Every structure is written in structure tokens, then in C-alpha cells.
Image 1 (tube, rainbow, N blue to C red):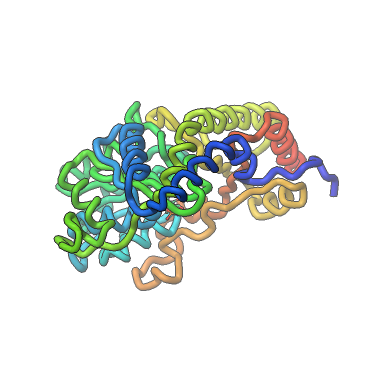
Image 2: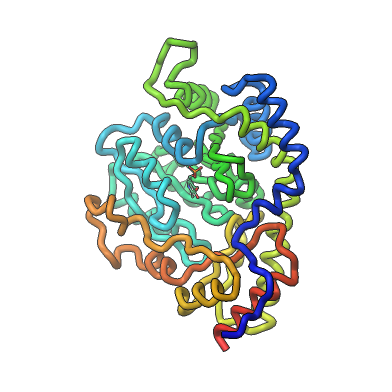
Length: 377
Ligand SMILES: Cc1ncc(COP(=O)(O)O)c(C=O)c1O
């Protein structure tokens, strides 16, 4: 086998990113450790304000992970046993896992192939056939917003809330509006691979609704607004002060890193087109006015063989996601079967995420595209 490239290119290179900010991060970590104040406090509050402002929302509520953010959001909505929550089957497991954990039943609607996001016409159909749907959770997958205006319109007609799963989409915009400010509540993740990733787990909720904000802030502290008095049954899901301090350093770089990802996405599209590689790169929909490229997933023929070939040539890739949620063993009881969501099922066999992180050099992107070309030659 001809090796097309010399130096391996990982899917993500967090060590290269860390080298840029190491001194600043270590100074903050030492400051927090020296203070011996690890729970809640100023760093968490400052980050909450910063992320809320960045997302165009009034309130930010830190929590332990994006998964917990989704769970807390659904807890705040007072779902009753037997209530259904509508989402897409093409997402990370946590979206539907949170619905189940909150005691509701996940109901799925298929996605659109060009955006990987929930198809609003399918949402409209599903709402008419499922009167027990009490909330909708669209996902802004891979860094591009779902088609929020018609979706929120359908939710309004029905009088049900929308929870944005913005775990992969901090700073992403829908018609100029930021992810996190469009639905009733939004959920962010600071998992290390996100555009704003911590040095461990972390999450954040945003909302413009003061009473939801107050409730969410309590729910992540066992439902307590006043110490040892509990208005609701919540959970322990705090954002660590150490993580908040690290994230506040990284936040200062977020826009420049996102611009690097955007530049890389453009380069990919140019090289792939110039070389005539028979794959479909993602192109933002007109309403996705700021795509932040948390992932750059192409659709490609013979995906699994291509992935193996790229691996042999030192190029890291990932499949997001190989099995849609309606076909997961743990959801067998929901009664879905293969063929129910054909777009999700097709994309599960065709999507492949390529390296997109901002530390990639243009010549590495060219090398990746040339390796793709060599595979299809
Ligand atoms: C779409 C989506 N939802 C939810 C989550 C859960 O976030 P976390 O890993 O922080 O729990 C993730 C992240 O992995 C995600 O990608």
C-alpha cells in the first residue's frame, strides 16, 4: 500500500491546543487550588455570565455535563409519566438518554440529509400522530443549527417547550441568532472534544426565562434554593470551579479556534472539488448563518473501507454515528424497526468525520484530500 502522507494526522489534537495556553491555564488552576474553593463560587458565576452573554441568553447555569444539562432541562419542564418528547434518532445517545432518565418516552422524527438535523416536515407529521408529545429537543448537530423558526412555530401552536441540544454548537447561529437563545432552554457540553472543551466533564444551561433559570439553578443543587431546604427533587450536578477556571481561559480563544475550523472547512471543500473526490462535504444551509464545525462529516461511498484506508495512511477519523438511536438495544422496547427512519439509517452508513481542528495546517488538509482521492482512484 502506498503511504501518501508522512506524519500521522489525528482526528483531534488537544495537546497542540494545550501548548498554546498551558501557562495561562496552569496559573488559573494553581490559583483555584490555592484558594481551596472548589464548589460553585466566583469562577463558575463568571463563566455562567460569559456563556449566557455569548449565547444571547439572559441566564447561564453551570452543571456537571451536557448530559446532565439535558436531564435538568427536562426535569424543569414537569414531565409526567407517559409523556413523550420528540427528538431526532441521529445524535449522540445522551439526547434520548436524558428523555428516558426524566421519565418520558423518546419519540423520533427523521433528519434531513444535507444538514444532519431534524426534518421539520417530519416533526409536523409526528406531532399530529402523537398527542402526548410534551416537548421537542432539536439537536444542532456538528456545529450547525436546526431549522428553528418553523420548528419553534410548531411547538408554539401546540403550546409545548423547545429544548435546544446545543452540546456541539456553542456560538453557532440560526439566521443571526445564537444557539442557546432560540428555544426555551438550551444545553451545552464542555466535553474536551467540543469547540469549548474543559479539562474533564462540564456543561451549561441557558435560558431567557427567569423562573426556569431559577429552577434550573436549584435543580443542579438537589432542588435547593436555600441551603438544606428543597423545593424540588434535583441532583448534584455542579460545574467544578477548576473546570470553570480552565474554561474561562479557553473561552478567550474560542472565536479564533472556531474561525480556524471555518477556514479548514472552506479549504476542504475547495480541495475536494478541485481534485474531483466523489464525496459530499457539508455545506451550511442558508439559515445556518454561523456554522462552528464541531465536526466536519462527509458523506462517502464505501465508508468503512475508506476509514480503514485513511487509518493505514495515518489519518484519524470517526463515525458519528454508526447506529441511530431508534435501533439501539436499550430502546428496543419503543418498538421501532429498521426502515423507520431511512435518512438516519443511510447516513449512519455513509458519514465520516475528518480532522477539522484549528491546529491543522492547510498542507495537512490537502494531504487528507489527496489520500481520499487516492482511495477512489
Ligand atoms: C449532541 C450531544 N448531546 C449531548 C451530549 C452530552 O454531553 P456530555 O458528554 O458533556 O455529557 C453530547 C456530547 O458528547 C452531544 O454531542
